[in-house]
Image (cartoon, rainbow, N blue to C red; front, side, top):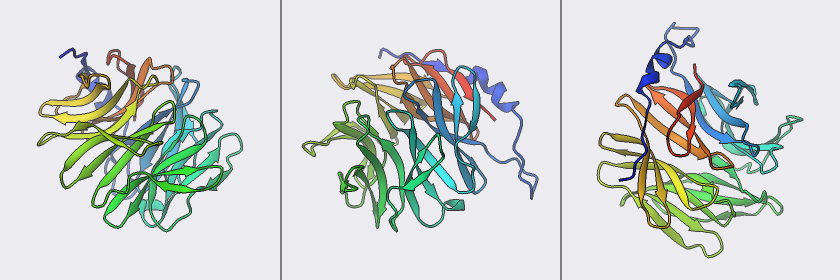
Length: 302
């Protein structure tokens, strides 16, 4: 296999030596969660969310300067940010502290901080993604024994269930650059897959089927639509993989160590880099690497 593998064990010392967030009540070190990066359209800034105890806040980091700051204040559980194509707004999921109760999809104007509720339903919704043409937002909604992918038309407010899969759990929808398809991961009694759905025809295509003992999740299209990246565990080869959609050839981009996992991989707008989160002994930090899996660098640590 034509694999380009980036080893990240050499930077474990940086993670191990990082300063700890301390829980005020029991003095125990709290795990760090910096999760689900999302590139701004200019490719200079990445939004993500940081979980602390029962709360989560949206943050952003300038990639070159590695300077980060708050987008939301962390009094709720705000997660899974996604920029609008013009970079002026961001969509995300908002729930009550401790991830309890109702979750809705929200949109925030970054300049004013004004927030509006896009779904306002009694169900739980998460994993919002703004379409590249700016006309729609996709998200996951929990319904009884399943979670489906919905698309919200922003002009009309009409919602469409594009998967409707009984007894299946679907997560991490990501748009193709032409806004014509969405790729996601599905877990069903028959197994787990990476699946794409064409929005004009409703036809689904299974891109990857997990083998026994394998887990596949969190796919994302390259800007040219010719490949996807995803998280996969297969024996000792745990990490980030690229799938060529023309011939289904798989390439391992990033192999993690035994005490690590990687996920949330997303291409930069120009396709030259990939942002992702890496967990080491349960602590999640954000990284950026080249699209071929080399030059892995941390951008936000503890």
